[in-house]
Length: 95
Image (cartoon, rainbow, N blue to C red; front, side):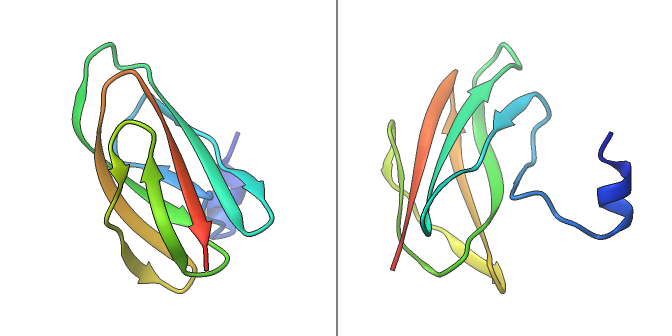
């Protein structure tokens, strides 16, 4: 289904390094909310996400883990890691 977008070089707004994790990017102005759902049926000790952002974040926060460190990996993208049991929500607040 996504083959034409991949061939065109279009990156999805959220990329997970573990299959069977659902991550949806919900925008509110420049801020983002990303619900995470783990369908692997086992806890993930370290899930790494790459996320497209419109401006540098002031804060990245998990409902279960609080403020998370992140790194900028290119213009308009950040990378972060966190453990994921069943579900979580990430809030990305822009400057």
